[in-house]
Picture: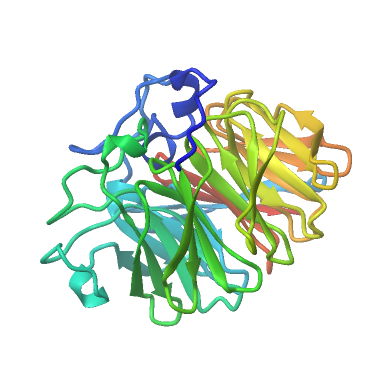
Length: 392
C-alpha cells in the first residue's frame, strides 16, 4: 500500500525550491517543465561560449572565504560534486544535456553527453538514442564510479516527461540513473528508477545506491554490485535530499511535501520520522561522526541542526533568502550554504550554529561542494557559471 502524505505547504512555496530539478527561475527550453512561483525573473541563459576561467586574485586580509576563479562556458550547472582526489563533476540538466568535468587547475577536461542507446544497456522499448537531464551526482567511496540522476528521459518511447507538480497517479515516465566510469569518462551502466529522480547517495560501505524519486514519492535502494533495484519504499510527497550514517545502517530522506524527515533502516527497510523540522525540508548533510544531521528547510527559509540521538531540532538559523544546498568543510567544523534568491553563500559554524561570514555569489547559487584535498568551495550558479572560493 502506497502511503501519501498531504502537502501542508502552499505549492508556490514548495515548488519555488525545486523547479526543473531545482529552480523555477531556471531557463526553460521548449517541452521542459516550468514553475512560475515566487520568481518572475529568469536568470540569463547559459553561455554558449567555449569553456573559460577568470582567475581572481585573493586579496590580503583576515581569514575567510575569497573567490579565486569563475568558470564559464557552455554549461548550466544544477549541482557540482568533488571526488576528493582532484576532479569536480558538474551536472548541467536539460538545458545543456551534459556532465562537465574539471581538474584542480579549473580546466575543463571532459564533456560527457547524456545521450545513450538504452538497448546497449539491456533496456528495451526505446529504439535509437535518447537523452537524459543530469540533476545530482554521487561518487562511490573508491571514486571509481560516479552516479548521476536524470530528471527525465527524452526520445523514443518516452511520452510524459517529469514535472515538479506531480504524484504517483500523474503517470509521468520513469527515468534513469547513469553510472560513469571515472577513468574513461564514459557511461557504463543505466538503471531504471522511478519518476523524476532528484537526489542520490552511495552508502559509505559502497554496497547500495539510494535515489529519491520526486514524482513517485519513493526512494529506490539499488545494489551497486549488480545495478538491481532491491526495494522501492514509499516515503511521502516529494522526497529529495538523502544523508546516510557512517555505518551505512540508516538513511535519512528530506520529504519536501511535509514538515519531517524520513528515517529508513537499510537492513529491515523499516521507516520512521523525525518531526518538527519545518515546512519543506530540502537538502541533508551528515556530520562526520554521525551524531548530527543538518537540513535546509525550504518553506521556513532556514537551516536546522538535528540531534540524531534524541531526534530533535537543537538549533535553527536563517542564512539568507531560500537556502538550497550545503557542503561541510573538510574538518567538519563549518557548513557552507548557498542562498538562491539572496545570491550569497553563508559560512555557518556548526559548534554554536552562528553565521561567521556571508559572501556574494553570481545569480542563483544552487549547488555546492567542497574539494577536501584543497579546502576549496565550488558553487554552481544556475545562470551558467561555477565559482571557486578558497577558505583561508
